[in-house]
Length: 162
Image (cartoon, rainbow, N blue to C red; front, side):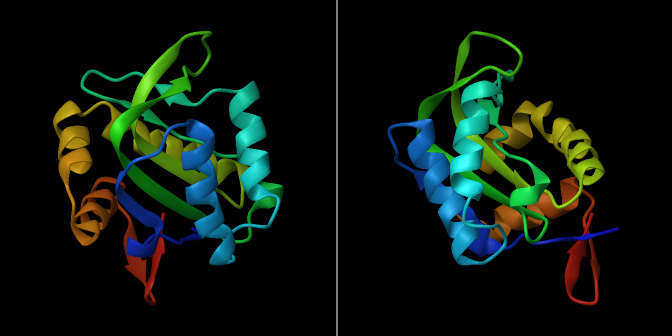
């Protein structure tokens, strides 16, 4: 099990931004400042999003899970943002777009850990009521607690494990 960096400083609520690139840049640069990812991470995520869209239409509101290769990551991390107004993201595996209101940015340090986390996130994405609760919540600690519980994150020596 590798440690996952996830805390209130990686959560943004009610962001008002005009484009997916602006949101990705905002979230990724925060991770760069915290040295969780390398300097090239931001551009790598933006470029990957152009080639492999990460938007997922769900029943109540769409989510996006932007990420990039492990070579851009220092420490396994997740950052979450809720948006005031939806922003269009390309739909994963499709040429369509979807209006995204929740972003789960992943920085995985091992290939297999990305798949494991994505599987756990899918359970969240399939729960419309939970997505709505997360989106409407203003308190970052509450969002953190919800995600930790739903991803079954455990504490070990003061760090999260997934």
